[in-house]
Length: 367
Ligand code: PMP
Image 1 (cartoon, rainbow, N blue to C red):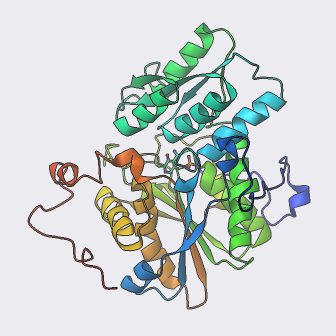
Image 2: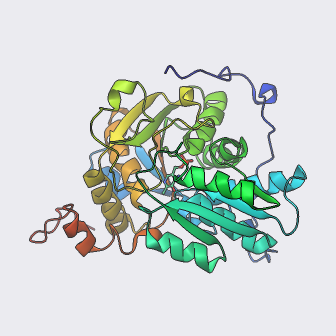
């Protein structure tokens, strides 16, 4: 399938077919927030100088730390946006139920907004996803339904299939549908991308993001292509997934059993305009977890597994950049989701990702 450019890149923002919402400005200093939802967006951009030096990169390596969002991930942005748009459009009314198929973080984002605003929430999530995510969802009052990881998205038993069945059975229930809802990429087009451009002072050379629904990379990529057309947009897709392009990158026969959560899919979501991605890299689980652990140990950034995938690609892709150029890597979620997974040595050893007899070379970091 050749990705179709659904929007002529390079056109001015005012000509965009999308509804552009102004960026939510950060609250300053000691002002009181009316709810925790004001803590969605406006995340920090942090230098990764030590990793850049260790990897021999000349450019500035910068991390957009999405784990500082209220619910702990980049997907809080879309949970917030999709619910508020559904309210504004008169779709979602007090007492209604929100149902969503998700790999977890969108579920947490929606459940958080639902808890604050008083909606019921049902989350359908594949078995593979961490128990930490399930505990958070339940603590937020969501009902959680786990579905077989191996079920293809278009089967009745998959997280997508079960969600639609429930929607047909439960009165006043809605699937906001991150795979098709324009609010998903638009949360990044209007928010994340504008923040990055402002934080970089309008000068940026490369942006690297993993893809699940593709909303993050497509939304950020589209805005950046419009405002700064020379920036290279790099997509990250796990081995075993089919999102990368050209299709030959997705070597057939490797199966779909990758352990990293939140990135990769067995179909191309409607929201995912792959034409904004200039180059794709595949990421493997070993390098993913090694780099996630390295990021935590070396830079003190308490990020999740897919952040490791993005960083493992950044240290390769940013090699082409020179001193003074900037590469931004998106860190989508937090260590919180993986305390019993890649953060735990026993899990790493059990899954063959870590040799119990030796420490990684970067463990004793030079100051
Ligand atoms: N990393 C993690 C941990 C995620 O949960 C997600 C969302 N599925 C992503 C990356 C990718 O985000 P997107 O769906 O916007 O492509």
